[in-house]
Image (cartoon, rainbow, N blue to C red; front, side, top):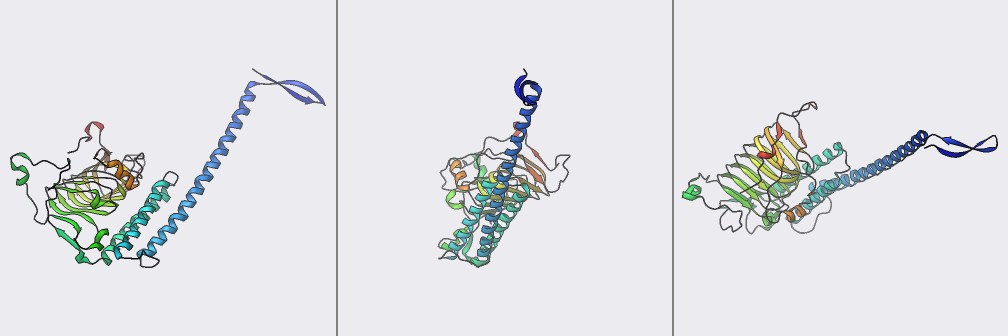
Length: 349
C-alpha cells in the first residue's frame, strides 16, 4: 500500500503518495548501511584484539627467550626450579594462543604456533645442556605390574603373554630416585617390544613425554602432558590424555593413535590411524596412508585432565589437515583421508 506524506510545493503543503517499492528500497538501503557499520566495527574490534595479541605474545616470547639463554631474572632456588618457571611460562603463552585462536588470521596463528614449537625445542635442549646427564637413568621394569586400575589388561590364557618376545633393553625413561633436580626431565618409554606400558598423571602431568623405538606395544598415558614426541614406533597403539601443546609423530608405521592436543605434526609416517581432538590444524608431511577420526578414547578423570591441559573441549578441527606435500587446492590430498564412520574404533581395551 502506498503511503501519504506531506510535500511542500511552491510554499504550499500538499499530500503525495510514495510507492511501496520506494519505501522498501529505502528500508533496504538503511539496513545495508547498518550492516556495513556493524561489519566495520567488528573488523576494528578484531584488528584491535589481533594487535593486542601480537604485542603481548611477542613481549612474553622475548622474555622467555632471554631466560633460555641465561639472562634476565630467574626464579631463585634450584636449577630445576628455574626450568620449571620457564616451562610454566611457555604453557601460559600456549593457553593465551589457544584463547586467541578465534580471531587470529591463519598466517599469524601459524607464526605463533611455530614460535611456540621452537620455545619447546629450546627448553628441551637447555635441559639437556644444564642438567647432569648422570641424573637420568634407564631401568627395566614390568610396567603393568602391581597395577590395580581396570585399564590394566588381564594375562592371556595359556601363557600367551609370557610367550611374547621381550626386548631385554626395554626401558622406562624416568628420573633417578634421589635426584630432585630431575623433575623437569623427559619421561616415557624406549626400546620395548610387545608390552603394555602405562604412565599416570603424577608421572606425566605438564611434562614432556618421549616414546621411541617401540614395536607391537600398547601405551596408555593417563594425564595431561605438556608435549608428546612419538618416534620410530611400529604396529603399536598409543593412547594419551589431553596434551597442552603439540604432538610430534615421526617415522611411525602401522600404528593407531588417540589423543587431544593443540597441534599435531606428523612426518615420515605410513599406514596409521589417528583418533584426534585438535584445536588448531593437523599437519602431515612426507606421509602416506594416514587416516583420521574424532577422538573416542575415554578413561576416569579425562575431563579433569582437559582442564589441566587448557584445551578447548568444544573445539575439534580433526578434519582440517594441511599436507605440506600437496599444494593443489582443486583436489584432496592422496596422502590422508577420513576413516568412514562404520570403521571407526569406539571400544578400547
